Image (cartoon, rainbow, N blue to C red):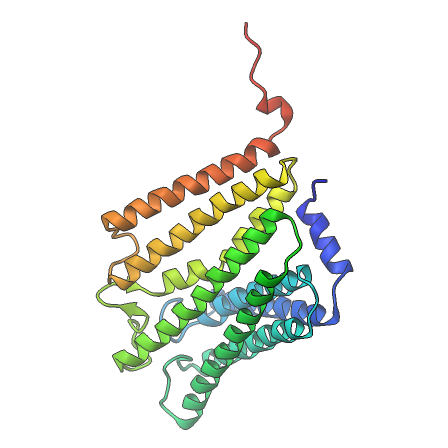
Amino acid sequence: MALSPVDEIRRAWSSRRPYQTVSWAIGAALIVGGLVHLAVFAFDTRPWAGPVSWRKPATFGLSFGLTTLTLAWISGLLRYRRMLAVATLAVAVGSLVEVSLVAMQAWRGVPSHFNQATGFDSAVFSLMGMTVAVIAAGIVVITFYAFRSFDADPAMVVGVRVGLLVLLAAQALGAAIIGNGLALGQSPTQTNLATFGEAGAMKVPHAVTMHGIQILPIYALLLASTSLAPRRRRNLMWVGAAGYAGLALASVLQTFQGRAPLSLTPVSGAIVLLSALLGGLAIVGLAADLLPESRRTSAPEC
């Protein structure tokens, strides 16, 4: 039976456990905080770019909020384990602490990252690093249980597992950004601390890998709302997942070759084209079933 995304939201809410309720509340609060900082930016003269801006609390709030909400939902799809609940709460609480520290530094008018100007700033930066380590450990635990036992629609199983692996890659890329900034040894007010080599934009692959955990399961939910057979849905999910993974790989190659995102090498360009083709096939495969029957049938011959 086809299951719409709205049906899944209702099911998840009605069968939620207390730890999920707490995690969802934290995730929602983080998103609201991100939107508030977007509003502050709209009325303030502080620029969007740079290490001291409203961009960081806004994007961190939205990104960590979405990730917290998604992981709490995913944990509800898995067989309940106490360690799974602890890991999910660790991600939620760690995200709240991380975003709060970033926001605090923004309101103080000082950089949140690489800032060791005072003892307090150094302590904040160190605490942020420890918090991210806790979040990463929680994601590892959730990923472990997702691969151990996952009884769900085949497409959802593929989407969640691949999304979690890509999210783990995001944690490694985040650590690489910190390592790169520390290795440069420059002032935290510099704007190139997340640039690898000449023009490698490290935030691009980090952002791409960070949000596969939303995009791939959403695609799986859309597939679940079709009349396609489970095997067909799973195959389309693999096509879409391969396309997304290829996009992430191309962005990583560009970055660590010190090239700008759009300054594609032949290899990266070929991967991007292949990823676009796979993504297009996945979208067409989904749309072909979602279109009304009258529009999918060919017009009668004259």
